[in-house]
Image (cartoon, rainbow, N blue to C red; front, side, top):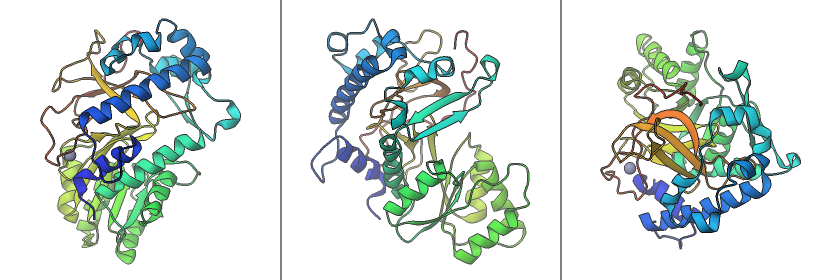
Length: 351
Ligand SMILES: [Zn+2]
């Protein structure tokens, strides 16, 4: 396995165009982010009716000279996405290869629709390919307990990313949340195929680990688990690590961020953002102003490389903070604390 802590640095270096073998410095990353931010703003103003209106007051060349100038740009919100989703598109509809529809609780249940081109999906496959090298290599067999059936589903993109690194996977699909009827069959599969890594929801995998321990199936082949999709409680994490004597990794991502948004390194204290594709900010949810490192606030991100539907200063509603101390892995990437340890900032007035 390559140096685990620097897998994401190596990926970032390649994405931002550094020579082979070079690792990125903070200033390299930020120079690239500024250039990509400007490019994203220009394209959005030019091709999307929604952003043409929303960004009418921003002259990119004049107003965005430093990365901090991102603060001059208006936010977008979930209600923008619900109400104006199609007019956020920056490509002709024939170039859209996947649309993800998410139900929301707001605005009489109007769904959110998020659009991706083939190239947008490739960004995710590439990130999965590199990000998963933190926890698996060619010798692993990964059981994917996420939706896998449709081309472009999260499990399908993960399978493709893993295959690119020579890692075999079993796209199984999600386990039912409140129904353990498939658990015995999955535990048999883990034992029979000597599955060494799992990806899935924390509650379901904790239930599997407990069930296996109760029935004398010790999951000895399992080395690592990536917990996905929701808040991970300490209890679920401990249960999985203790029952299977394995390492639990966490990540943060949403459909809007193109799934993978940040990934744990081998230190497993918080996670490093996918900074070559995403610009994250932590803001005060009341004032909208940036918060200093260490302070809890609302997570905001801007997509830097997406074509179909860029998200510009998108207020996702999750609560997060920057961990101020450098990570023990030596990465030049910033580090987010675990998202979800605090209640989400949902239902703000006007959001
Ligand atoms: Zn690290």
